[in-house]
Length: 252
Ligand code: SAM
Image 1 (spheres, rainbow, N blue to C red):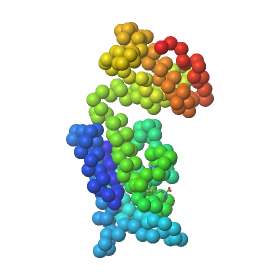
Image 2 (image 1 turned 135 degrees about the horizontal axis):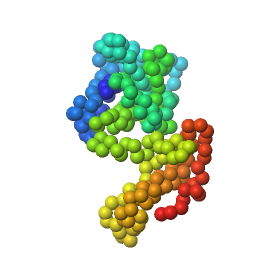
Image 3 (image 1 turned 135 degrees about the vertical axis):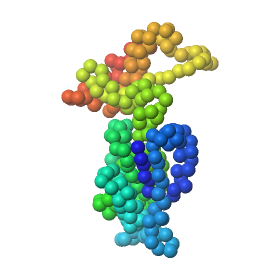
Image 4 (image 1 turned 90 degrees about the vertical axis):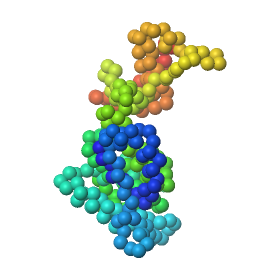
């Protein structure tokens, strides 16, 4: 999968590309991450990427020309191949695991990082194919949001995580139970020591009874989700069936 990131702060990505998952996935050739400096697409001596907002008000706005030119250059380079052009924005659709899975179906995506007061609206209206937000809060720039999106999608690509089994059981992974289709949260994990300052690991995990352990984990995952994120449990094929926390709370 190829990512083209358009930013006025290309140096921002040095850290995340040189550590952990994105570094490993790049080294294995599973992803190709290209960072483009929007200033390279300006045509004035000062390499101007921002300007004051029409109508007045505080702050600066990213100008449309460098962003349009950068995306046009990418499209020219891609030839016939169409790809999503995503503007990171707090006003966009909320990015989640399901959207991440959908994005992995594209061999290539471009990410536009805003700054300051944001990006000239003509980019959202006439250039970007989608606007995505990583949460209901405001960051200073789209770079962190682009990094989040790249990390979340990259770890879903085949051959990136050592243990692919863990993907199916992670928080937000699609699950089914009878008529329900839902995304639960992960179950609680424990490691040695079994007794830490009197805080004991649940006995069932020490029992060696794999059937009981599986049932306990599934119940705990549902219980956690029903307490913290009940909205995750009501996505069904046919109709919304709310799960009562009380019916899940038995058996430790
Ligand atoms: N004036 C904008 C508003 O109130 O909606 C906020 C602009 S923000 C300070 C600057 C840039 O950070 C945005 O253009 C966007 O690229 C990025 N950004 C901020 N919060 C974000 C979020 N929750 N998700 C994705 N991108 C975000």
